[in-house]
Length: 196
Image 1 (cartoon, helix red, strand yellow):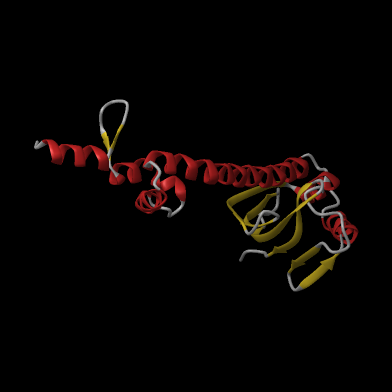
Image 2 (tube, rainbow, N blue to C red; image 1 turned 45 degrees about the horizontal axis):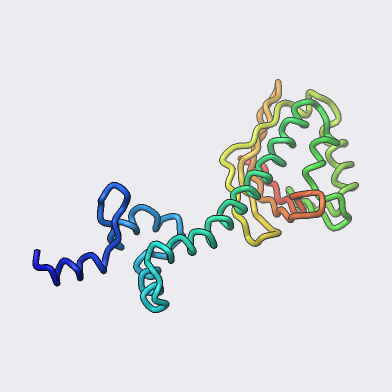
């Protein structure tokens, strides 16, 4: 390779510790997916504009983005834990324990079967009335769960609920609005339907 061409080649690329050339395409394949649509090509262009090295720019971008991804996943895991705790409490026959997943507020809303229940205490009374015995409670299961963060303090969860009881197995779908409160993520709006 001609020396001037080789110098130009070396200037445009960086090498990995194993001697492989880290071209923008190779970097895009390795780390581009972690940046949610921010391609390494764009990072390279920004690096060229600012006069900094490509790998330095990638490192700075990763430092800015990856913590946010980590925090988002942590919040999703906390919401999953709320739902898991609800199922566990229900299957122990503890309606009050199940209700800990809801926001203890007069603003909490429950919509189901054409009726609307407003307020934590009213919802607790509804559950106690409808599921007053272990036989009526049965065994609860959530499935097909999807959680999407709407902001740092709000999320929506959808899924399927099913009760396994001696005489029947009612099921349906739910849509839950979660909000991050001082005591953690809590359900503030519950829309639950009964399947056919």
